[in-house]
Image (cartoon, rainbow, N blue to C red; front, side, top):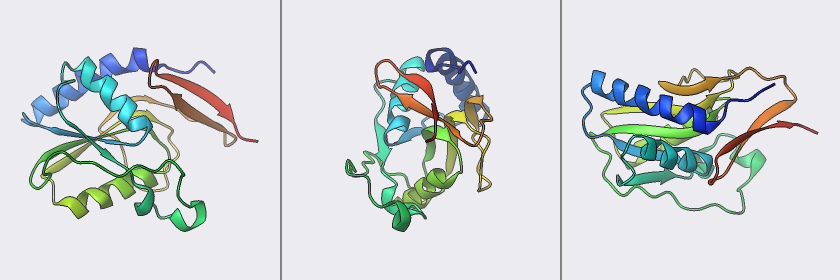
Length: 168
């Protein structure tokens, strides 16, 4: 299987997101990314949109995951940082891979602990079409359906690349 790569997907995603925001008359969105791959994607996407100077919020959703008691805490956990108020603001939430939807659910729960945004636009580099929750991206680079024993891994941040991995 030939995997799409970020350098091919991000320019198209940037155009689609700009059009999406314009259609909804969102002139001053605030960008929030999910650690770690989502931060890499967000930085590359903002650069492609000529918005690299905009502040970028980062979320670490570890404590908000519904599988926290089973998986535990990743040893490299960093705190969330939102350098802006989200109350009443239009947010663009960016992640690398949408699989079950549980990470996005956790991110939304955390965001609402900070305030009530006016809207949240979801952007994902890849949608693996394996959702367990009814969560869909508004902007997506590519949708893949993988065999049960395969996963994708985003490596980076420079260069960003997508690798196919087989579970042991």
